[in-house]
Image (cartoon, rainbow, N blue to C red; front, side, top):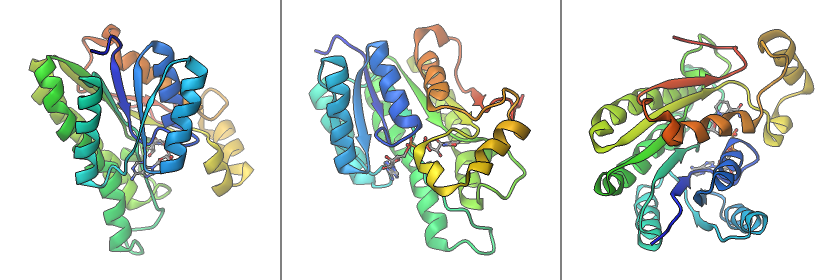
Length: 252
Ligand SMILES: NC(=O)c1ccc[n+]([C@@H]2O[C@H](COP(=O)([O-])OP(=O)(O)OC[C@H]3O[C@@H](n4cnc5c(N)ncnc54)[C@H](O)[C@@H]3O)[C@@H](O)[C@H]2O)c1
């Protein structure tokens, strides 16, 4: 039986938040299971993390919108590790198009990955958390869930708002089992992929005009909060939503 707590992270091998969470949780001592739709990067990142920490990390390629694949992934991890103590739903996809212009297939893809993917992992992992008497889940949403803005696209904003509702219901249903479920709404978090999409002025403008701390977010800013929310220090916190947006979109 595994002596370390086991954490499964979706979309864990990209350039941004997911891989920073994986690094942070490995640092915290978790046995981290790296999953990602990109098969090669998933394996390579798990190998890299293994080298950095001198202990093996499991890689399971996983597209969270594939219901059967999620079920098989969870079964494989539980069979091999014996338990899953922590789940971080980080997978997200978006296309920026208005309600008028958005193609139905893009609307569907966004909901499938961002919202249904979050449902599917919880649907399959919660039974094992209930059986073992506890666990903790963090779902990565976005300030797009609240903002009166066209800049995130209709599908993404709707899906990420759905993640917040799903988080609250899952928390309400599972508190009695010792399971806590919370969500994080990041603002702009820099990564090299976004750098390819947006011009420099986008980042400098956000840092100067919107962020209250004079910079855009770093993946590590989100990872630090995930680490806390998953930990026993957050034992009285469930069904909550926390922003990591440099004050761009506080709520409450
Ligand atoms: N970067 C931001 O500014 C920002 C802001 C608010 C919220 N978020 C949310 O944070 C999360 C992480 O975003 P990020 O920009 O840091 O990217 P990231 O680097 O953490 O994630 C990108 C990874 O997602 C994987 N992926 C894509 N579709 C997938 C699927 N169907 N199943 C599994 N993996 C899949 C890709 O292979 C890639 O490796 C997302 O949910 C995103 O919506 C990001």
